[in-house]
Length: 219
Image 1 (spheres, rainbow, N blue to C red):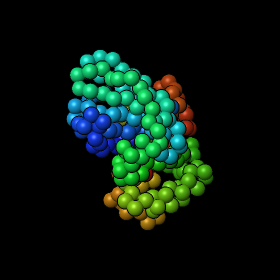
Image 2: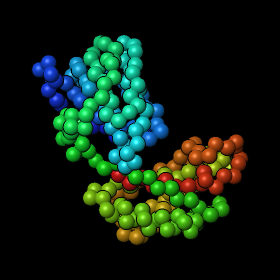
Image 3: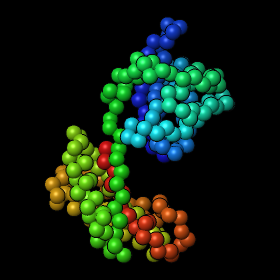
Image 4: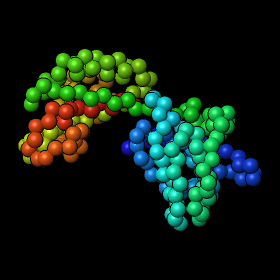
């Protein structure tokens, strides 16, 4: 689940200050956001995902019980400390800009995710992924202050520990390719999930090419 959050202080109609939060869940994601006001009162609104324009599914829950669902663009709910979330309402586009315009203007760009696949059980990228690597380089260079995470994944063949090492090796190969192509190594971090985060669910000791991948996330 990926959320894009922004917040700013706004003046409520009653004259008190409250914190207004916008939430942009990834499309097709079911996100749960605790209604925990930081100033006594919150307004929580859902906006489309900045890249796809789609709207995710957000549940706002309260510590004292009760919850509401926000499923449409610009829908919102007011929450007050010690109370259950209020009735869902909808902002107009002009109200969104008035309340959240400052926060939207300074939010960081949404992360972009790329999947690279390997041929067989090797560290050799498939022809399609070789071409995608060129796109990744161009995309990273288009960001003013890029941050790159490279995560290796494997299928379920072999032991869990061996797959952690294999995933790390594959991620390191991609990191080295990016550095050799001109990227600063200090902006690239490497990690491995091994077989713990399968793209295609399989039993143990099952060959699945789609699980043998490296995910490159660029912020």
